[in-house]
Image (cartoon, rainbow, N blue to C red; front, side, top):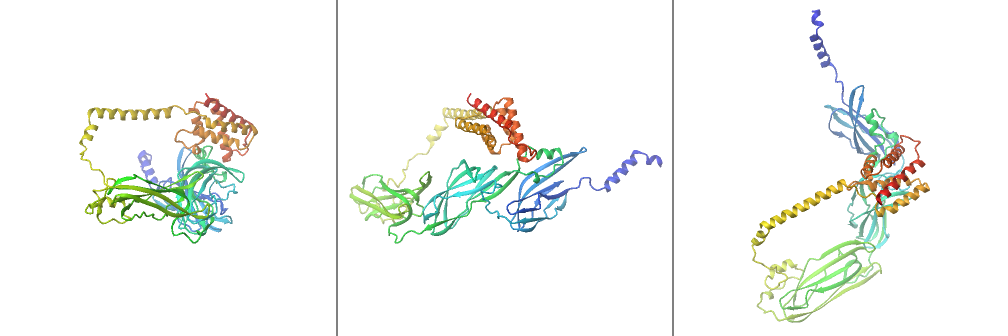
Length: 597
């Protein structure tokens, strides 16, 4: 018996029983911690949720009427302690208070390792401050991204078009921005294509700005609120040292170290509320008023001046000018004893610099005279209101005369019952298929067999193959050129900016260092790469690939490391020293020399 107790088989059986009755060595965990317990309406809380184990599904965040909880980031930390590796998944949430007082962050729920776990509720205290719907107080130095709208005038007439300028101001690294134009019952909003990047100064601070435009037309008079311009923006929010969780491993320290650019934040930003005074149009309105407001002119044309009776001539009336023409009333062309068919109007709108909204409305009429002689087409007249002169103006166009040869017989099909004046050209085609060469498409007896034979001929197939092969070869060569041949670092357009930066460095301006790094990101960015989203490591790698000297690349690396230490608080004693400015100057001079080579 003693021999059995000392045997390896007994020890193995005993170990199995012990392990079977023991609890798991690595039980799943689900915890949450807040960066601070007191704040104001202006400042958000940062909630970090840590999960150890296998997560099934997603983290469940209960709805709260007092708090806005938005997930902003996700990361994975791996730590090795005494040879044991632990993997932890972290989720970061931005918590914004919607009112003052003592509030409770509700318990979050998750299923980890097959068990339903939840965090403990967290109590926070929120003091007074400015509520965060728009967040566009430029004087607040803590704001990093905001939206502003600029109006050219605040007094206008009903139906008068104005072009407003919208700017997305940012002092952070943007990773995405999407405009949101909500409908407004009292306004017509016109999106304008195109944008430009610029820089502006507000309250002594420099901002990067993405500038857009939007057309606005008030649909009624009175004191009206201008609809807010919304943009859903995503940017990297630099994390302060207090907001960071203490690193538990070398991997955690690397993630929160020099190369960490902050937490990604997504918010819908709105421009500040604005109001304008909209005046009603003066009374009495002329009977010929066509319900258009702006400065317009009219011109007309006739497709031909000599036709035969029963043929068709096209009369075109074009209204063009500064303002909107979408609400313009129909213009009728009435000629006694002559059939007139009105086509559907064509409206074009565009925004031109210095002129605002420029609209063009094209009216076309098909005129079919039945009797010969000299036909007077008369003129068209209607009125518009000019907001620049504040008066009603009459617009007119003389259509001139038309020479008609011959007479259509009363029994001719063209003398059938006239169509209504508002009938479209499509309707007239079905009614008069024998008399009007303009309204009736030409019928050609062609089965298309000759065209098919042409494209499938042997010589044609060979030519098509060579053409496709040439295009593919060109695309492949072009891709190789872009991929392997570095672009020119310094262009003529940026040479003057580099000289200004060198002057600023010589004067010792504090902002010269940041401006120089931003310009380096622009110059070293590869095709399709966002300069603002470029990390320090990517900037150094691009500098190597562009063929800079190793000593220059090392200077650039040293600059970026000191900037990161200063930004993220790893070394609070770091400042913009003369040696840093000297390194920046050497990098810039090297880039200029290479760009001019």
